Length: 143
Figure: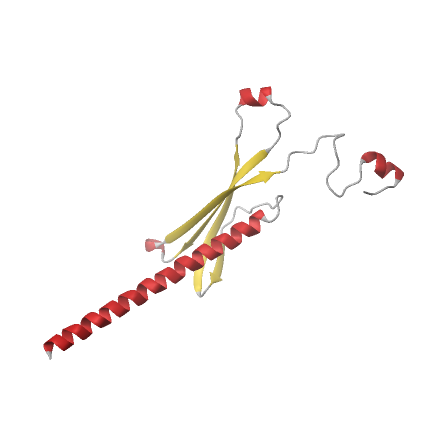
């Protein structure tokens, strides 16, 4: 009878441990999905401006906080820029951190990527897509 009792105790301990692990996995999966969704939202439009304030969201039954950051990336140093003045491509590093849990045991998940920034429009250059050229605009013609 003692052996049966010990066997049941071990079985219940194993089941409860696997249930806790499954709950943690579900929260981590939800954090990943939220991070990917917010990052995709920021990348969907190249001119999307990221606010500096942190956000909060309830997702999959769990309270999450998140922070989006963007920082410029230097592709060329000053000497390279002087040799290649026509190179105007700029990138920025976009990072999201999703966090959850109590303050003393907070967990987080972080994703990051690079996105291209449209170069500044040069005066007299080619018009933006969907915009008429200056000559065509003067004649009232659209492209």
